[in-house]
Length: 250
Image 1 (cartoon, one colour):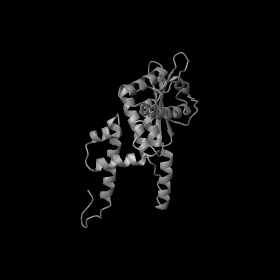
Image 2 (tube, rainbow, N blue to C red):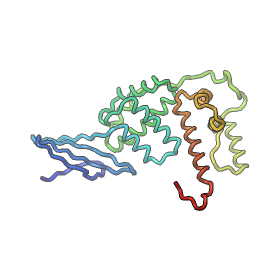
Image 3 (cartoon, helix red, strand yellow):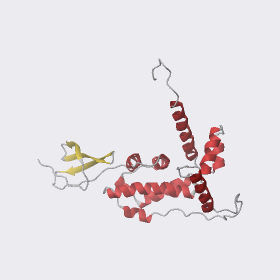
Image 4 (cartoon, rainbow, N blue to C red):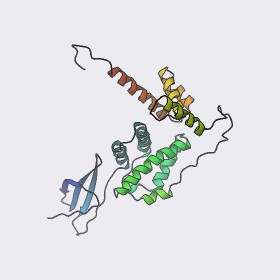
């Protein structure tokens, strides 16, 4: 029996199984950008009608997407947090992702007390994943067009401000001038002082829950990003110490 499969992506056949009931199971693997995706096709041979249906998990696809995307570590941490919430909400096969499902995910994020900006950020990361799935022929991106995101709340911006005379743009212009004079090539903005504030607090041993309140993070996982970064920095510092003669590495 000759089997011919037409597809809009490159794949290899991983396994073929034929059951006594007349069902043919074909498992395909597609290697795309350092991530291997599996597809399972079921074809009924009893009446001659063939039906193909890819079975792809949204959560596993999302994890594979950011693992192979080459984004910065901070952005990758954001994808990890989004996937953590997606796992708690409930995974779905890609072909079962509907507008109602995505709208429910937005409500799930809001129900966990996340700020509007954080909700929109996590959903934006999920949107990137779904657009990639659309390019792979696994998702209909028209589903995204009907999802309604919460609007950002407008605040009385001049109430309770510490700095009232300089704008953020003006401050960044001055900081850039300082960096050029100091021959600092790294991009530094006024917002960088917020990250510095958080890392200094953690370095001084301030409890992480206290740091969370001072930073205004609604989710402790966001504060943990800084703690993980600090731990990696400490590990790199220790690794710079010279090796002890006569001792083997553990």
